[in-house]
Length: 195
Image (tube, rainbow, N blue to C red):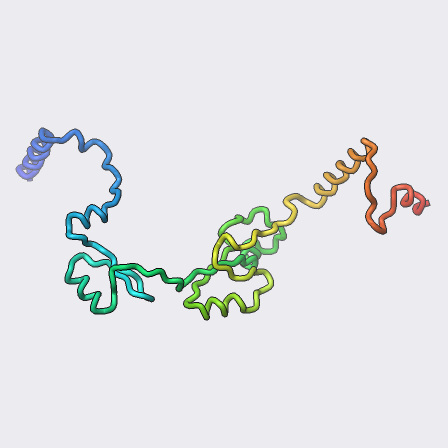
């Protein structure tokens, strides 16, 4: 054992003499590594495409020819399907927060964003025209089209009432006339009704 250990130490010491100081530097990012590999390997690896099937990577001409016989080709053609559809599902949020009626602690994104995969155009049409559940929005094709959620007031009703009373008093102190809602009584009318 000692002999083996000393040999390992000798080897390590020997390698340390030839240590390249550049090895202490961090390795650069492997930018375009696939392109570099293609340059060295006659254009491989490359992807082969077939409609309705995931792309396959080939690493040599034999694999490429085998996939070509199965209908794969080098050129990619855009496929609209399968497509992802999105909608808000507030039922999911309500299940998470339980009996609480407050939405303040609920993350705004993406916890109540539901997704589904439409297999083809007919499936997408069926999803978009189906009856929408009560607490959900309609399915849309782009996540930016999903309507924002109205979380309602972010403060208690008492705080909102106090804030509005303060605004009304400030306007009254300035002498501004407040429009009265239809059917509402003025302060004088309320006092007269009390007597």
